[in-house]
Amino acid sequence: MNKDKKHLFLNMVVGTIGMLLLGIGLLQYVSISPQGFGLMTIGYALVNSYIFYLEAKAGISNKLIWIQSILAVTVLLVIAYFMYV
Image (cartoon, rainbow, N blue to C red; front, side, top):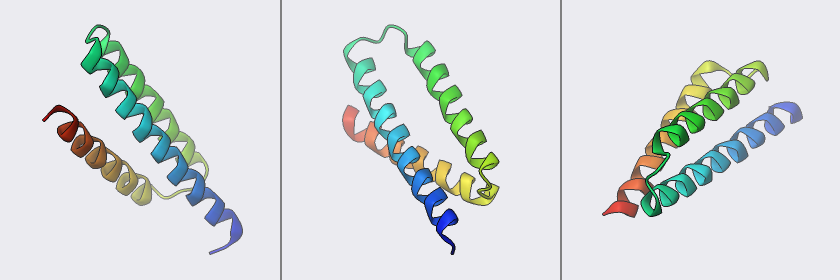
């Protein structure tokens, strides 16, 4: 694997961690004040889809993007479950 590919994958991992942290922050905010839940959900989905679009433009394969998104959603759901139980 060349240096450019490693750099792309590192940026992808950092971006996924950032989106997870943003999702956790949104969940905590919703638990305090449920107003604006729909708007936050739509905004989070739009930002997430734009990041995936940029990853595709950067040359990352669709298979890897789907694996990354499924793992991120799973981790976010598990964290949300433990936050609310």
